[in-house]
Length: 243
Image 1: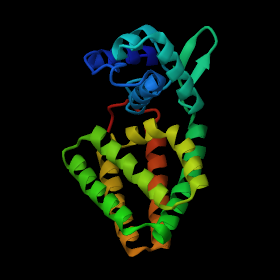
Image 2: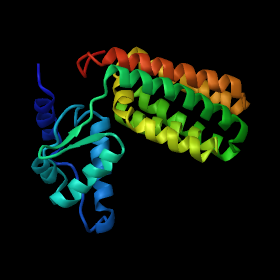
Image 3: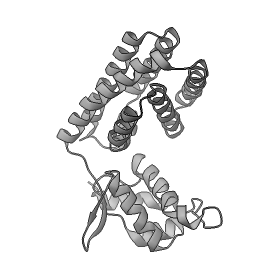
Image 4: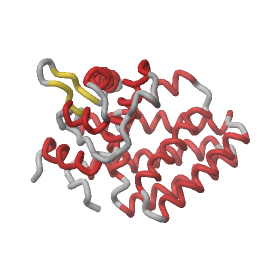
């Protein structure tokens, strides 16, 4: 069985030809943010696995940046709860315990249910149209089994539903907790049956929003997150490519 570090080292190889982050495209003041964005995606998609130590030299070569913006990016990700900074040992991707995951999804169930209920009260027709268009795009990603693209669109939809509740405090709390769960939410869709179920639930969300039925929307969102949490807990001890 591969160790997290062995998995990390081997998974970096296919990305060596990825487009680097260059200072001619990114202002130097925002370079650490751009690096953090790229690393966040690699963490979410499991290319930098939970528990792995972040090899500075390999990541500098991969992203073609110096160690200064890379280390600043580590600090940004540490503040988000994605990376742990260890004195004299560098940075490590945080691995959530089963207890952490269970408690986080319990809170997310409540947050997403409230977001959905408030969205039904306050969402504009333009916001509904945007969510419907993204859901159509997500269905196309699902049909061709493009998990990476599906997941990016999925995140946009959940963020838009949360934003449509027009409650800044709720959005802040939601973003904080959701960040630490992104990798596990991505992984849960590797099970095709659960992925199919999640897609059906997203259509239920659209129907509830169009009807502006807050009770129905809250129930759909709560059930969606409960099932997502169950799928994540089931996947914790499964190989990454397991269905």
